[in-house]
Length: 31
Image 1 (cartoon, rainbow, N blue to C red):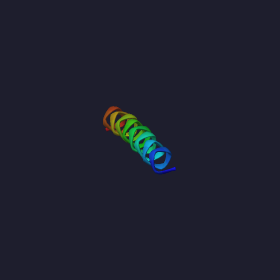
Image 2: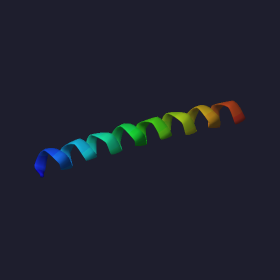
Image 3: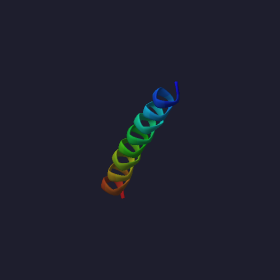
């Protein structure tokens, strides 16, 4: 279960980073 939890954490971090970049780009376009 440890490996599964670690993989899930990695996926969450990657998705969060993508959303953050997308929001940052949108904010820059609006600004």
